[in-house]
Image (cartoon, rainbow, N blue to C red; front, top):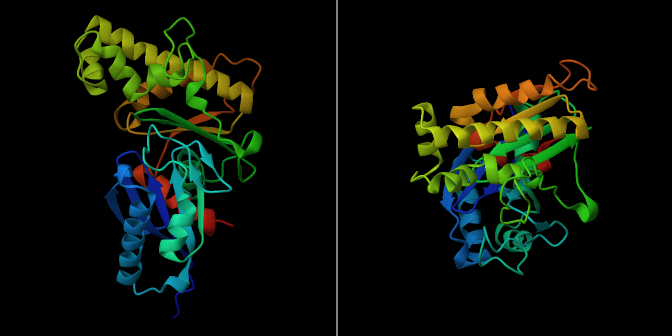
Length: 305
């Protein structure tokens, strides 16, 4: 029987790694590989390596390029979605003033669509993960930073000129010191891996994991940092609930691998006090796709109905 499925290549770009995957029209990740980003080598070098990885997967599955609808790319913003340019010299130095989509189309030959990395993760979760059948959905990813995305009625929410909202920079505890964005006490500065690590440096902790371990062991300052992170997430849940009234809030990112219970418990506690919202109308769920979400969601830019 002929294979009636459609396929797309999903690419999830990070500061140190690029995940490339072959995805079918049912949202299955058929094959994938991880490449070093090495952004200092330029966009053309990355495009050539992504192209090679994609071709190897297509060949391994006995497919042709004609069976590939296109390539979807999730990338840290800010982005110019029309030109495909990445405007983030902090995460991706060396990619300034060059169209990533054009470089990939030149290398791959198939059409390319680009989207914010937090948005494609949410798209993936709404397609075949924790957001499936839910509407509206808000997703927060707690990793090195805190990313966020909103999807309503099948569409990703965008701001003016198509800008992606930086939910992680919302002020949640304004009595705290300002972060790199100039915001006092942002969610990202208090509840991200980098933010927790930075707070822990003053007490001799090497990283966020060390802070969490010390807090579990009863270290007073570590407990204070961790409880502040939970509280920041709780305030964020309250704010997002009243702004968007989502059916579900999804929590993803590396921190949720070990700390979902505590973050979600505090967030549910805050939501339980929201007397102007229908009782128990908003639930909180852990992301299901883990590091596959970006690749699947990026491919979904072509494959989802």
